[in-house]
Image 1: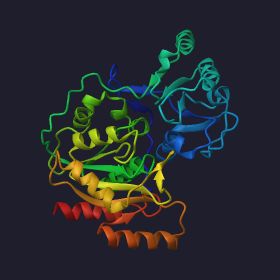
Image 2: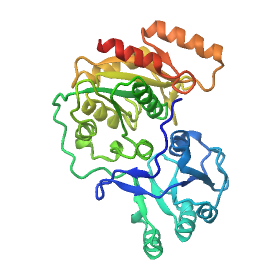
Image 3: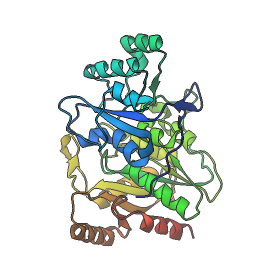
Image 4: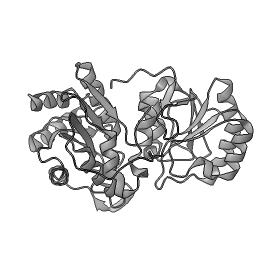
Length: 355
């Protein structure tokens, strides 16, 4: 996978400070999670900003390993770390009380704390008081701008691609980042538009769509991908899934506000049902395409799918090739694994569709 070069300093859009500089490198906090999918923020930082990650902090019972040295906050500070970044994104986005001891140790070691959880760090009195006394910062990434309007439905100039999923945590962010990198490699003007906390930490800017009041989600998507040059591509990170019983709403609002010209379906080849919702099977992929197109046509009647990105990490090379061939024949679309095979075939379809 092509990766973006790490910046000298991590920068992050913030409503009160348009370009807030984060103190790097990072100690990535993983709590006691045993689910690799929960560690998507940490994994995303390690894969796309490896130069900014100095170590990982894990509580007893944690079985997820990002391949970083295990460090305490004091050890990380001695190694030059500037921030402890919460590297897990749990369902509901609440900060667990068992994490607070490590957060307090981080503050005492002089580290800022950076979180993409829904719970605001500053809402925890003990952390706020401790950070104020130590002169360190509590940085919440999952805070949307305050100047978002309701969606207008107005057609904007420029081209837009949105990654959509059969479920959560199926590669929408990775696919968007890889497609953006491939477009730039070919000299095509493009911008990655982050819509979640991990993407924002990677890109340095964006809007956390799932933290926006529901009436304003489409407007936030419009703000995220404004008018641009006719040949410019905004590659928008998708959120949730139309087939998710809890998170379909944010997916639909992002879909309408993005007004995508092109869609890429993301799917985990090993997934048969919505993660943690066993009573909700994932529909056949052709039905997924039809559902997304029907919804997207409200704001862009000319929307098309240009490819399918699959996570095939559990398959052999032969199994992957056979699955890709069968799926491509069924859907008449290029099928790739953004990590294993790259996304060149999808970008070639994008170019072909625009000619």
